[in-house]
Image (cartoon, rainbow, N blue to C red; front, side):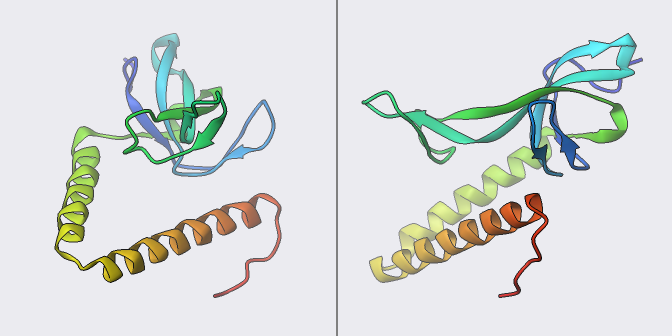
Length: 144
């Protein structure tokens, strides 16, 4: 019997080489879109960042909170049960709870502190992107 069902949310538990080139890092989210041989393998749509279209028709990066946002598809890959883990609703709801708590706390802060939180968040995103980029190109990581 299949460990996963159609349209289950999953996450990679290891880095995967993509057929289209490049890699999908461990922790990449995806969704089961096909089940092969009663769960011996799965066709998984792997997701990248959040995007939206501008009024000019260009695609730009955005956040998942943007009402016009959609997930970028990295690739659709055949994966085996040992390469993926389920993302259960409890994990997703915990993440949403934390986001809601952060929004509530931001409402209590003065404008100057909100700007500091924004700058810190941008720093974390930059650091994450730099770490991701350096691991893809096999360059040594620079400690900060």
